[in-house]
Image 1 (spheres, rainbow, N blue to C red):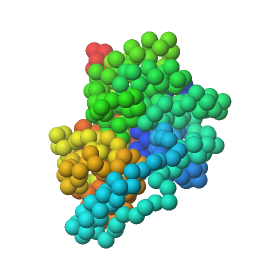
Image 2: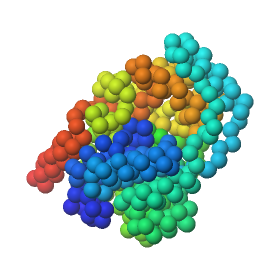
Image 3: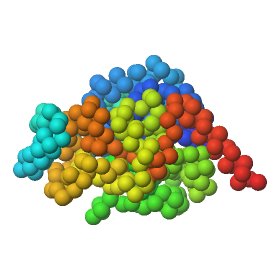
Image 4: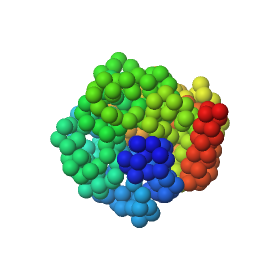
Length: 360
């Protein structure tokens, strides 16, 4: 058992990625009961929903699990002209595609992070992970006062070091191959897309330079046990897999999304801004192509994410995967649909076989 696994009370060096909107309490509990760390993405959830979902996980498992939040300003200041243009474009697209849904202005663009954070503290998971920015020193101390293990998300060595210096217990490095929203936060003209196997040793060295003992978790394109071992050889203490779990029956990913993963070409995975207003990795589909010429003019996250919500719900209900945000990592076609507990066992069997092969 690795020191990382031992510290948080799990048996396996495996983390199931939070995947807000796709991970469910049932998925998280199944992974946890199999000995790995199940993670529930609650970045879109209101405070009471966070408490309710955490309670549901606890009803299904007594094992440690993680809750994940997006670190964002509490209030958004939208450019209403850009919002109006986006609504016009989105409504026209839905009409052309035969969907009856239309955009609307929400009462609030997104839940307030301060309130979500308070709910997370009240829920008191064994582990809390964060993306999009650093926590404040006061927030970090509040988690430590509750003995909550903190994992920060980094897309560069500099971000990994920033999390270590802020006091994170571990850093999850998100390689370019990773699906879903890019978790970076340091200023850059373009989202950092450093390949995972280059990023792992760079991040390990960066956190070591901070004079902190901080495990590095590898995320991005890992789909089997051999990939987990390869990340470990480069210095990772554990691997975080997301896309691999999307096709599990416990996942809430739309049926069309699950179907499209199995036939996804590696070159079809791209960086997309037009669904949420924040760079994310997923399949280049009909929606992405339709919005390509105006992607840079659309409002940022969370405004655009709220505006596209009716489209995404209607498309999922209609089985239109080509109009859904089909987030996935680079090796999406390697998904293996099976119950989550069976997938965890399979991954660890592959990991042990690869380790024996390496030792001989």
